[in-house]
Amino acid sequence: MTKSYSVFTLGDALITFNPSETGPLRYVPAFTRKVGGAELNFAIGCARLGLHSKWASRLGGDEFGRVIYNFARGEGVDMADVEFVEGYPTSLNFKEIREDGSGKTFYYRYQSPILTMEPADITAEMFEGIDIIHLTGVFLAIDPKNLAITKRVLEIAKQLEIRISFDPNIRLKLWTIEQARAAYMEILPSVDILLTGLDEIELIIGDASIEALEKCAADFSIGQLVIKDGGNGARVFTGGEWHEKEAFKVNPIDTVGAGDGFDAGYIYSVLHGYSPEASLEFANGVGALVTTVSGDNEGLPYLKEVQALISKETIIER
Image (cartoon, rainbow, N blue to C red; front, top):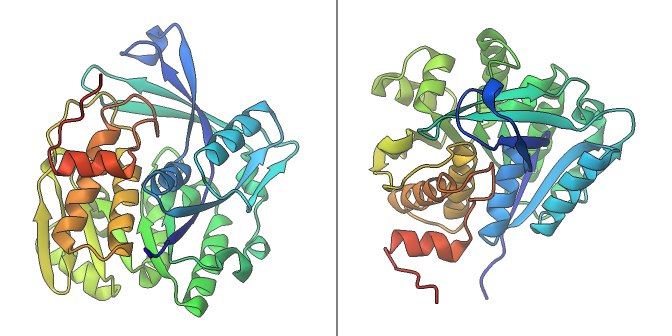
């Protein structure tokens, strides 16, 4: 019987408004309501791949909070540690998408419900049966208090010997690079798998050279340092060696959420004992498929879809 693996993540979720047209936001006449948020995207991506996926959060006690809750639960995400909070509006963002698929995000998350979460809310019982905990810099950026919450998670993870994956996911609209660096320096010594973009790691350590990356992995005892480089593919430094895999060629529609999808694919691969190259290939496949659909998580694929892309299978619809 195949073992069922479990992942845990926590963070804010948002109602995302996708533009009806490409171009500068000021010229967009209408929007479509979607659900987004880096950690929730990751949780949904893991659930679609067949993992037991648990997400901890706080949602506004409003209609938008219900939309997010029902959507995530419908995707099979474990919502046992999600609570509704009165008096704190569910966070929003508006997306701007350009013709090439790139975009910007405009956040409206003042007084986010996640602000009501406290370190004392994190208990060992929340992590029963969890194999990997996935954290991101977005949660850290929302409020200074979230560093204490994250450190509480890391403390419990160490006690229970649960591996930690971390995506810096830098949001300079939410905090400064100096604030980000200071927080990351407290987190990185506990990280087993670091999933970062090449531009992000350069912002964090000031250098993206091979030597600097290897030193970073050694200084913080990071077992797997994964570099996501979009259309250039991805690579990982593990066991003293670099492994690389090229990106899949697709026509991107919307690149938002691709990094979250990559993370879900990579963690799935690690849990199932894939080789470094196979893990990169699988994660690249998930990230590529995300970009082919508009929305933060609509393009997150199911396991068979990723396998079909990797094996170059043709799916015939009649």
